[in-house]
Length: 208
Image 1 (spheres, helix red, strand yellow):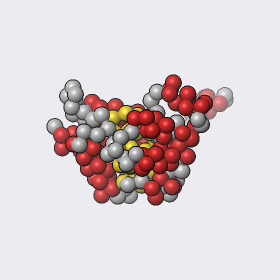
Image 2: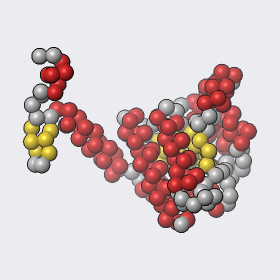
Image 3: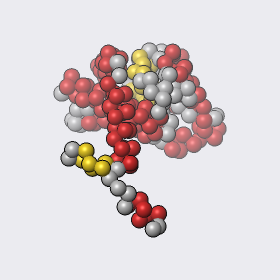
């Protein structure tokens, strides 16, 4: 029996209306860990971040987002939701920009001033007092994320973060942190997007 046939022919076990084999259990275990992690979130911190975003919108300031890897993709996604999906009306969304979105800018800065400065250098040009920087980080310890927060502080911007693991240095220096203590990068990145969608729904309720 070849490897593919062996995998396809593995026995399954029935549980109620569902059929589980060892791989099914892998997926259901992941689902349980994600659900358990969501249940442990401090919703007061999520509400605080929601209100921070709403205040940014009301005062006419800009929201900047950044992250690395999967968190960069989530920054792009949440920026998209803030620009349009939050109200679904032309011109009434947030002035939101993902600092992870422009590959030409990112590679230029990484090459010329170092990867650790790819976000802070953008803020130095575009950030203004009372703008909001929202960072997404699994570890909370990435140097380019920390440098972005430091630059935002210098510019008198507001700062916020969605963090995993122990929150790292980011948890200590940001104004508003949603911290989920989970030692799993994928669960941490899942949480970023789930919380992002929750906040978008809350903002839509408040704005529409």
